[in-house]
Length: 118
Length: 152
Image 1 (spheres, helix red, strand yellow):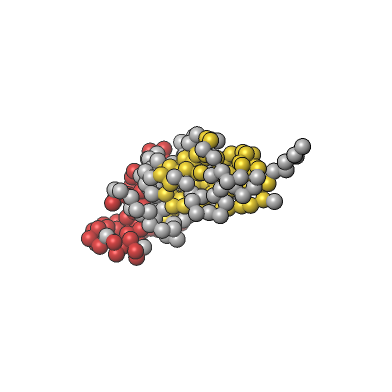
Image 2 (spheres, chains in turn red, brown):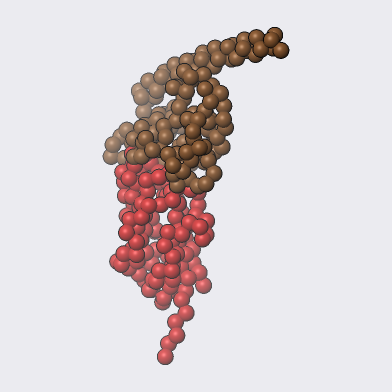
């Protein structure tokens, strides 16, 4: 099973959005073990994104592409195949480093991982 | 003078725009030369900023077609695009885009009425000047064509 969230956040000039997934249904992973993919696009140059899963840093602040549209899978992947355990918080932090307001388009897929017990 | 014109915004890019695509222009915008001018996204909410002069709707690249056109030199000065490389932190461009939003978007216009009056006045003056230059250029071009026709 795969769950997906997709959205768009407007980020003010020189501002930070601590977590674009806040309030989303799968902000915390619903699966005992899952494998996630983060896709993102910016409306213009100057956005950086950072992924933390359960308090573990997956990427440092990384420049976002400037396609000005919703992400295309798999072209716009920022980081793929990261592990997430049940109830762990997925945090995507976005920073706008420019003097103008920008849009951040994102998509997170979480796929249930098969676990062999015994 | 020959320049490239953005089909969406009407702004002019230098004649070497396509030749230097990916070197000095359009870095990160793909292999095909497109306009790197910004457009306003009025569908997204106004982003409030600590600095009031930065409060605006978000902006993004237009990715529209660029066409080679011949225009008067004076008009290029008035309508040339601010290229990404000369304004990486978007200081100049965001000011221009915010002014466009105050003119064209009602909610921004209501919020800054005194600024709007001044911006509209300045915009009208610029439009009149552009119109004057274009008419003059058209007359010169017509005269040139007529003279050449006579020679032929």
